[in-house]
Image (cartoon, rainbow over all chains, first blue to last red; front, side, top):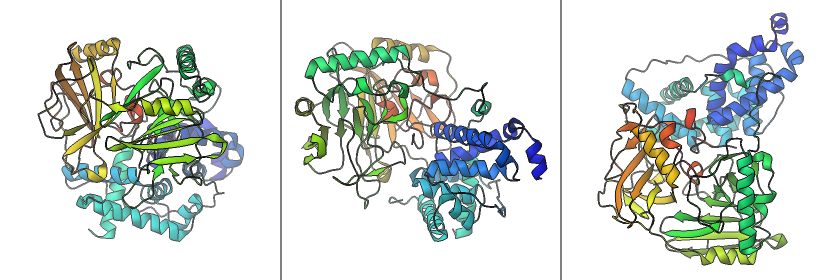
Length: 165
Length: 385
């Protein structure tokens, strides 16, 4: 795997992944402009370090971590990533409910502090586990769990339509 | 709903949102000599605009703060900066509106945030207390802390600074805050910078500057305004029939998300469009329109509206268009008679560009989380860092 990645040019690696990386960056940053800036910065760093980074099998996590780190301003060296992928049931039972759900998630994310939002995206979009998220964000696992718990609590209030949500 | 169901909802929502991200043309983000990095370039028009604003300002009050817009780094202005389509009176000062008051400020100042409480129990924070949008309504691509600005208690970004006098908050540029959630009084900072807050017309006005004459000039200009209604009931059809303006007024109304069940909305910004901008809007409306989107609005509550008022030369409001800015479901209710209506035409960049200027990109969140062709017209879901 390492050899295969090393032999790829940077562009050969990057082009097929641009859309997915941009979506991830958008979820982390919350705006198209910031997402593009974060992705562009991460790609520039990845290209500069391509030989070193490309010798590892996990270039994509490296770039995603740079995006998340750039956003929360908490750079940490990354370790290996072993992420069990959670089952995501993308087909909603009711399209109207799906619109309401998406709207609620959008509003919850909009109101989250920067690090909390990044934790949510890394957990529920990237399916990273708690230690990995803690390492990326430069905080403790307890903090990560707290971020996620609070975000879910906000989502619960949002779905119920509580005024104080 | 248990924890697992909530997690699934969050996952579905995030994946659904991610599918809506504009990824077309993402190749331009690749680094390399053949790619264009989005580096701002100073436009000649911006140089002229800033120079004129700065000159007029220094002639008017001769203040060291007034020179700040001239001395800011020009590279922070985007290439798209152009002449503003907002009406600015001669003399280099412009008028800003907030709820029931009007106040004059140096014409070259941009727009930023002001302290407010993000939640009921939180201490005031400013997100963010620097100029983030130029006087022409164009985003600064980098933060320029030297530029004077008009701040409103709006969350422009999730990069917030706690407001605690003398500790976390250190002013770096002259400002006027409208409606900041701080107590009236005077705060003196090191270096001669003074911040004065007055309670007036049911809200607050705060001026920060090292220049006494500038502070007096700004505070002395505070007065009641009748360009736009200071408050509107969302479903009320009894709107004011007159205005102190003429031509086209742009009136921005908002009710806080925490008070989204409230039946009224407050004026948070207003401006008068130039004749050219009015014509541009008229032409855009006359073009073939896309059919209005049929929207699912379950769980979607409107919290902001832009009202475009046509006013005749005698100050009579002829009619109003209401711009609805629901996420994913935005459009214009033509000849509307209340805020809580349905739109007739979908929102398009050509229908937004004529009036999304001045304070709008720093005051209105907009319909699509900052995505797509109207990205610079509004704050977006979460604004620049």
